[in-house]
Length: 126
Image (tube, rainbow, N blue to C red):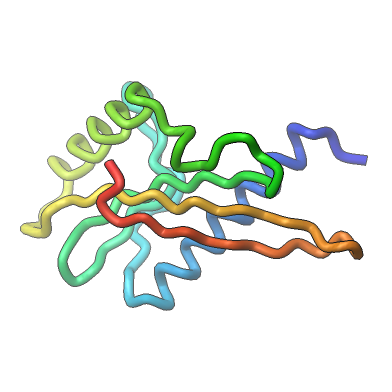
C-alpha cells in the first residue's frame, strides 16, 4: 500500500499530465515540464500559444480539500513564480509576452474508486 505522500505525488504528476494534454488540445506547444532553477524554484509547465509564452502553475486537490488549488497560492509563491518566469524569458529568444496561468484541478473518486478530474483553467492568474 502506498503512503499518503506517494499518493499525493502520483496525483500531482497525473494532474500535470492532464493539464499538458489540455494545453496541447487547445493549440499550445509544450516547451518544458517541471522546469527548475535552484534560485527560483519550479514551474510546472511552460508552453507557447500564438500570443504568449505561458507559465502554468498546476494545483491539484481532492474533492474534500478545504482550500482550492488557486487559493493555496500565497504572495511568496506568486513572487517566486513571476521571478522564475522573468528569468526564463531572458534566456528565450522570443517577442511573445509572458503570461502566468493557474490550472486548478479537483480529483474525485467514485464508489468504485475510479478517479474523475475537474479542471478550472485560469488565464493571467498572477
